[in-house]
Length: 314
Ligand SMILES: Nc1ncnc2c1ncn2[C@@H]1O[C@H](COP(=O)(O)OP(=O)(O)OP(=O)(O)O)[C@@H](O)[C@H]1O
Image 1: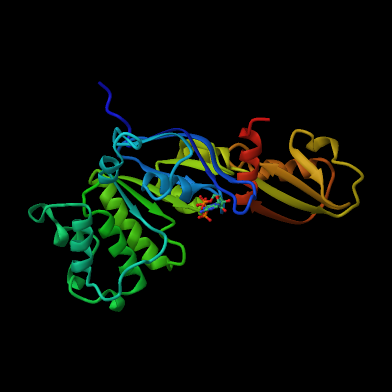
Image 2 (image 1 turned 30 degrees about the vertical axis):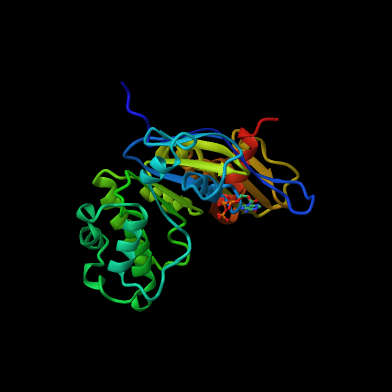
């Protein structure tokens, strides 16, 4: 028999009630999603896409309107408490009680999850997140990065097979970010399935083996990172030429070119398929003298929009 996936979501819907007769807000419009066991999974989307709603449903903080969700084979409707035991969620906000030490915070959390004293691994987990030497320091004396790591440690007290990190690096500086990632990668190598929500494509690209993109409450992509990046591999080169043009010159018809002003040609291309050299050769071949040029990467918001348009049902 095949083992159930780490997370299985089907037709998941959430409509938040509108206040005072205002129409409700459809935050999730029927999302199907499977997160394979052992993966480092990225859930990407612009602000308001529905990521936190989806995670809130899994964490038992948001009541779904429809559809099904299960974690490690445990169905949310049938056994919400069993599901909670199998998932750890690292929240966005640094909501730590400043008067507890990491050791106390961990013990409290273990108590909340009903982990018997004999099975608690407070020091082992604090050690794994590099906070063993701070076990008895007040949380208020911890740096931002240490607090973030303590939140990860707290989410691990019940040894869940799935760990979800909701925008963990918002406002975290580069060094701390890298420290946090090394730690989470270590957890993943040791067998924990990781789900990371982020706004940053580059972050997801460097960490995740699979990326799903959610936009306006719908899933608009879900594929191995390399395939997705190849699909998003969309660049633009702008060439300024020495003479006015009335139209895109004949030699450039094979490219996705348009005029952006009388002397500016804008050409979209995929870096994996087309060499800039070939584009420039074609421009020169059309008898044009190049005065200036610039290239730019696809803008992530534009990419989200494009994918949303491509995928959305009419
Ligand atoms: N409690 C709520 N009541 C009403 N609407 C809500 C509530 N929570 C979220 N929404 C709306 O649902 C939509 C999805 O929000 P959600 O927070 O899930 O998005 P997100 O992708 O996590 O965005 P962000 O990256 O900004 O956290 C948004 O339009 C948001 O305004």
